[in-house]
Every structure is written in C-alpha cells, then in structure tokens.
Image (cartoon, rainbow, N blue to C red; front, side, top):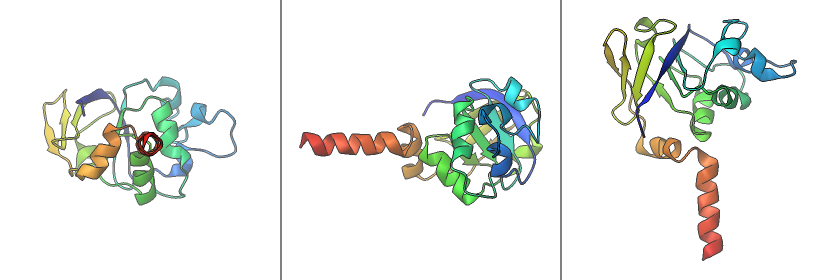
Length: 163
C-alpha cells in the first residue's frame, strides 16, 4: 500500500458511533462528528486523516460510521485504541485504520501526517517525530489493499463463475 499523507483532524478519547453517524437527521454526512467539532463536516477534505485517543468508534455497532468517514474522504484513522466492531467494519470497507500508542499526544489539528501501513510507522511531518504503530496482520492489510471485503467477494465470484 502506498504511503498515506494528509492533514490531521484530532479527536479525544471515547468518540462513539452516535457522534460519527448521528441518527434522526437527514443528510447525515453534513452532521458527522458535528457534536464534537462543528467545523469537521464543513471543512473536512478528501485525503484528511483522523488521529484520536483511546476507544475511537465505541458504542453501538453502527456500520454506517466508518462508511460515512470514508465517503467524506478520510484516508485513514490512527488512534490509541478502537471499538472492536468499528475497527472490524473499517477494515471490511477498506478504510485504513491502525492502532498507535501515544499518537494523540504527538499531533495537533492541522498537522501533516504520513502513515506507512506496511512498516507500521506514523510520522508527524511538521515535527519530524515518528511513532511505531501496531502492525496489522497480513490478512487485514490484504483486505485493505483490495479495497475491502466486497471486491474480494466479487473476485471469488468471478473465479467461480469462470470455472
């Protein structure tokens, strides 16, 4: 996978899926993370990266949460820890996600970040500080490289119908 670079949107601990994917609203994309940072849904750009503290994506198992972030153009999420279901759902849709101890102390909103998923390195381009993230197992990296589970299933279906 190529190196991912982008502008950081920083969030604290315990960002739940209700804040990421608010219910009871029309045009949900206009309200993603709005309760935490009202500027986020208005200013997020394709290629931006989320950096967060612990337990990002906790709460209910809203499958829409990682999909909404991906549809807004978020290119990766790096946090100290994740809600288990959120993490699984992000990998399943091909949204690069990686756990990195102490990452939230090393970035500010607007910093430029570089992520190398293969080497599990996270670099603050502005400060030059590089952190070691927790490497993803090969199988998870493979799912990310292929764009998620659906492209893999389509590939399998094509192989089976061609036989």
